[in-house]
Length: 216
Image (tube, rainbow, N blue to C red; front, side, top):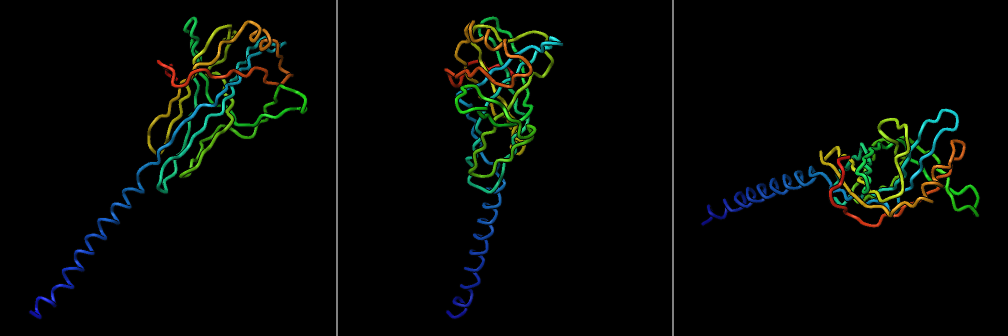
């Protein structure tokens, strides 16, 4: 009887050791799981295209403020890189691809002005998203290849944003449809010259999760 009592503590110690190892392994594996990241498009995109008055070079810029939100419950961070926009005309099907160029902020030159000015803050480098954190950079996008003509014309456009998750090795993607641009919108936008840094045209999205996003 006494021999059985002597063995019981050693048996319980082994059980507790196994349970401890399993819990430690489970916590380790949970900590290695990449955090989930949610992408939300900004409810607007600012469109700016103009022509250099001396060289006739065409400039086309887009400004958007997507939100990247970490929903992970562990201590892992995520790194967001290679943010791109793909714009497709829903009229003629033309596609123009943009890449992130800089990050900045909008400001009004004077409180009475309705137009805004873009102030550069940094290059569009990788974004580190901590657990439970949201990052919403204001990104300036430029075409991947030089353009010799205006892209935007009256009509409706679909915009697809893609971004790479470096830790998870996955891609985030969101496609929205913008409200239609009128002939007056295009005329006002094309009249802006190089020495005017105002971004005059704010286009609201009308439909989230658009069908058949372009490749980006």
